[in-house]
Image 1: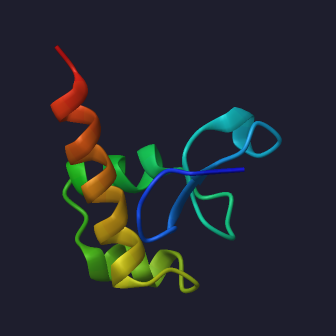
Image 2 (image 1 turned 60 degrees about the vertical axis):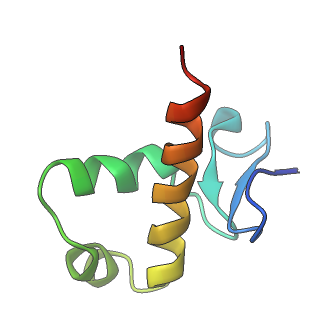
Length: 73
């Protein structure tokens, strides 16, 4: 398992979700959370749908996306 963020909240494991980045301890892929936010859902909506997540998990997804965008040409 590769830890992708300094907080350890976002990880990647080839045996989990085909190696897509997920929130640690779940099979919830980062892209899914980002898609919810892009479609107008707010953090409270996401937390209601996924009660095991925390605000920090959602923030970690946004931080991951920010870093990924900075690396893109």
